[in-house]
Image (cartoon, rainbow, N blue to C red):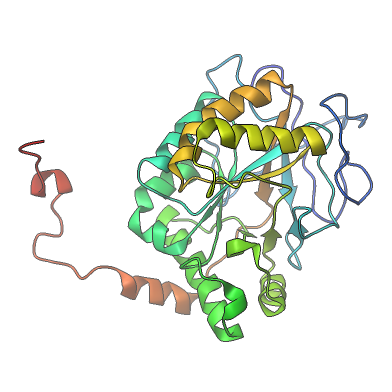
Length: 314
């Protein structure tokens, strides 16, 4: 936490912590929540799905005001665009989420911006991308962010059979777990925010929390960083709080994140970090599928890339 941050408060999905009654997020500017602080706040969550991350060295950082622990039993949904049940954010609070990574250049830039402001987020990784850049995704995990999944190949699951849906979901989970070397956070976001009922039911059986959004940045359409920031801030001023959807896959977003964090701090907003109560275990049969997707070894497979590829002219 940044210096002067509120005590950590741990909440479960089954109840509301300091929030308003369930319903659409209400407009409002940052301010007092009116919640009564716990006499003795519980310790930060720990376990394989949550890395501690580096200590904050920026005394004026935006930081994390609350960490909420989510009991994903039964597959609760979050994000008022599709799910209305769990309204746990207080006025002026935001949850930052990033989809479609990891990606070369862009994800590391997002990580640097978040680290500078001592902010934590949720990353929903595509399984294939995790196999492309496992080292980058491991950096995401080791920085203390929650790492969830976003299917194996980012297909529209509403156009797939139940068996195909299951394979896309499980291969994504297995690939992300393989990349970070740990069971992942029990968090999932559907590609294109399309929620086929069979897949929703399956995720409930697997006790995986499903994420929609409150504030969509539309950064996959808007490429200019200042316009991305403006869209998020305009929606945040309207709704007063919410889960923000962005993409660390997008270069414009990588450039926008430092600007967005500065605007959040200037506006008095607070960042909430969501972590899973129980890590999500992958299934052995899909772990085996991911292992088979690994590139065939060659005689020189042990050599570092720097000894194989050298720039001799630009």
